[in-house]
Image 1 (cartoon, rainbow, N blue to C red):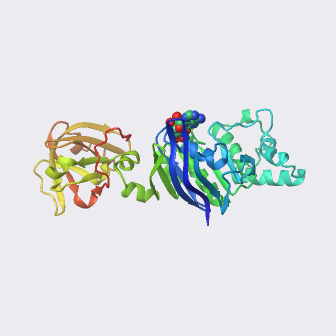
Image 2 (tube, rainbow, N blue to C red):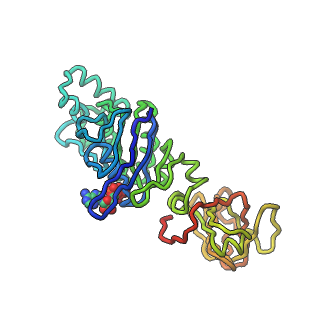
Image 3 (tube, rainbow, N blue to C red):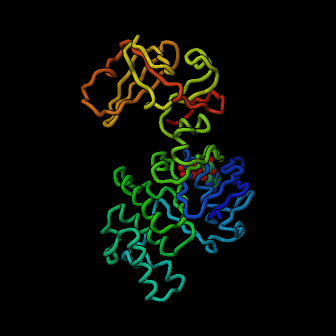
Length: 349
Ligand code: ATP
């Protein structure tokens, strides 16, 4: 049975359709992410599931119970926000116990469950510390423990790692996923960071203007994006469409191709069957540590980004030949056909 179901869920603020006819089913025990640009409606969905916002239309189910009319405190969910407000004057244990104290759980049981929650977030032995004596990542884990201690069926997380620096954020992503596996609670996670969504989730819903463009596993999302928006928002992708598709590929349609599926060769070099060589010039070479990007302007089409892993010596020359005539080699199998035939340009890479 689904842990969370949204049926025709909408929220309008005056003219703004923050969420527009959303239908999703989130499975029990799933790590489900809602990914999308700022203002696409992710937080509003979360707030409707939590009960902080009343839908304009539609309903929210938790398990098989319609909770649309229930107030937040009567729903079996907990929310962890980005600005993980923990009480500065209480030690860690008191912070984690707080929810249970409100529920009048007796002292011994409270202590036991709080210790258990601290162990789940790997903070055993930190109970007596004050929040000021913790790092950002540790504080974030206290906030998580405070939610876990209530043993909700569903945990809602709104950009919970947003305030952390990049390195800590990456570490916490791995931990959060591990914690979710250990405790087996359904996580609904809001983020605008595509790498974060891909690395942690069982499935991801990509939002755009209050609507869901695609719900899929990370692999499916990356390898078979359903629309040009998804192809552009999740990872870097090159687009070949319209006249360029006809000229370069000999077929109509709109296609995406990932930079790592392309390679640059010297002009005139022969290619394998199934491959197409597109002549152009290297306009820019961007060294990114583990990979290098070359931006190649095609003689008869758009610029393409080609990436190459830096597994050999950084001095290897082929991509660095700025402004020399080259060819971008593309295998037809690496083309992703996009269902939408649109000419959008406003995508975020
Ligand atoms: P972000 O990643 O920036 O948090 P989001 O995808 O979570 O964005 P929401 O916060 O759900 O987006 O907002 C969706 C739309 O609804 C936005 O256009 C926003 O301005 C609007 N909106 C949200 N809350 C309100 C409100 N209380 N009153 C009016 N408009 C609102």
